[in-house]
Amino acid sequence: MYTRQKVRRRKSPKGVWIKTAGRKRRKGWEAVAGAAALLAIVTGIYAFMEIVAQASPENPVIEAAAQAQKETEERENTQKEPISKPEQSPKESRSVAPLVVVDAGHGGLDVGCMEMEVVEKDINLQIAQRVKRRLEDAGFQVLMVREDDEYLAKEERVQMANHYEADAYVSIHQNTYEGSDKSVGGIETWYDGTDTGRDSERLARLVHQETIKSTGATERELWDIADFCVTGKTRMPACLIETGFLSNPQERGLLASPEYQEKIAEGIAEGIHLFFQPKAMYLTFDDGPSERCTDMILDVLKANDVKATFFLVGEYVEKYPEVAKRIAREGHTIGVHCYRHDYGELYESTESYLADFQKAYDVILETTGVKARLFRFPGGSVNAYNEEVCSDIVHEMTKKGFIYFDWNASLDDVAKDYEPEQLITNARKTTLDRKKVVMLAHDRVLNTALCLEELLRQFPEYRMKPLNEHIKPVQFNLPEEKQK
Ligand SMILES: [Zn+2]
Image (cartoon, rainbow, N blue to C red; front, side):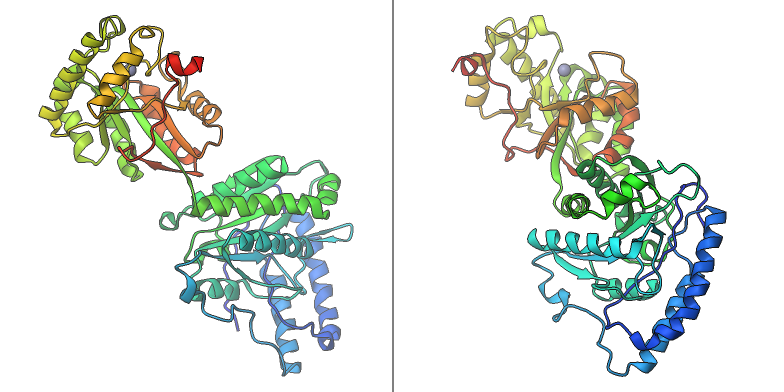
């Protein structure tokens, strides 16, 4: 017998959920008579839910009814199959590929929501099967909570995932809106924000964002307040996605179509894929250290366990040596920017550049103990001030064994006084989904420090890393290369 989960209804989302679970077993037609009575109760529940118009992914009354039916079936069906589980323990082949639990919501007597003959439990299963195929094609191990129309208590679903020590859990559901506005539609995703140790937020963000991208559906909320059994009791990163509204006639039609289901599956699978194989972003900060911003940025990086790269200005290292030391102490990569940030003086000649660089290099070494190998040209390797000398400088610096990094994305935080939100938008616009992003920012701009925490959350598909000399640099084309 299962222990009933405490259910708290959500007020804010406009959808209604009537949720539960499913399991692999032959249909117990013998139990149909008994189920008929229970179905009457369930129908009553739907009527009740229509009145309250609140969303909950779990419904204890329906679950109790479905559970009772299941137990009746089990008593009458002595030859029932065991729970569908992988033949071998996934643990044994775990080194090969992550194990993902794909949970098709509801099942059996617990149908979920239903509009005009379109039944949630069926849509959930069809999408789940498509997700499974895609994940397996991508090399993942997949554990399906149910593979046909069976009831499975939510506690059993969680138990299965925990028992096999799965690496991620994604539950698939549909929504319905009880108000008169049938145009309400779109995707919302839920995770348990109280448990920060599992990385569920990143999984939820990725599944949410990639499914919106693949379907073009309206983006609804990403909820961090899920206290559902499958998001709360699982020990691995977990989320629950509502892929659309059956109450919306247009969306209902789409959700029932194989083509649209495939788009949803593509997004969910891509989200999971990016969760396990994120792209690389190298955050780089120029022009510091500064009196206040650098420390603010270091605080955020530390709190999020992120390492970045700082291209330092020699005269500011002399001015704020403690900040420069902190950058080194906290494990970030230190590179050379220049000693004095004056384009005219720097790029007057190759000699003037090399002299400035040497001075900066020495100050950084003296202060932080770091022998910098990486550097960044003020204004980038090719800019309005250095066209005459840049190729020669690059040649000289490369001969000395230094490696320079330009950038392929930017917060654009020095050109104009942008608000923090706009800086994130700028970053997003210039990132262009690249596999490797070198992001330009400046640790002397207050709004850059202020947006950083949110910026880190807004790029769940990237793992933030510090630059090093083994990474193939991102470099602009030098003038002679452009002419080729
Ligand atoms: Zn600069």
